[in-house]
Length: 181
Image (tube, rainbow, N blue to C red; front, side):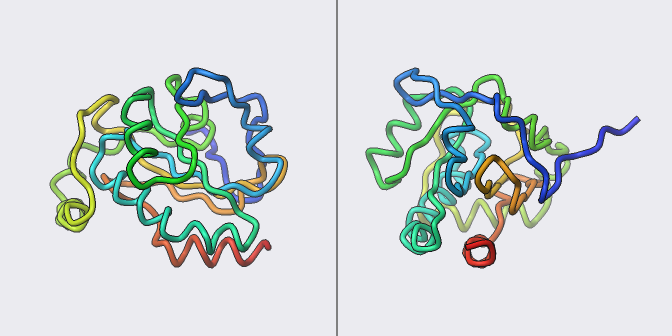
């Protein structure tokens, strides 16, 4: 029996906790006191994920102008998150080692054959212009995702990646940030 997936307009559990790179607990309820855009990366060493985090950094002033802050979420590699924050990513990168948020948003593993898709290779080649591959620190088939959560954890935009580097275009994110503003 298939379990129903979370959808835009629904609220995700406020009891979800993440940690910052120093091991301090950060509750999802605290993050969703205002609107927040959250890229959920496969792991912080993933080349297309790093590239997307940098694209969001470039778009961050426009998102913030619409009342949306950006906070990244990845697995458990605090050293990779620290490196990114010291080298171009100016927003907090948090850790979700038990995948509480990933599970709440139904972000699971991608199908292995998606690795063979030309779309996957195009994403990698494009990412190679701005990012470098780091050490794999999570399941190599963890699906990426993206969510904008409104106050109280209401899902405004949800994108479940189907292959490596599958994130919504920045223009889609910006349009969604304007709609609910």
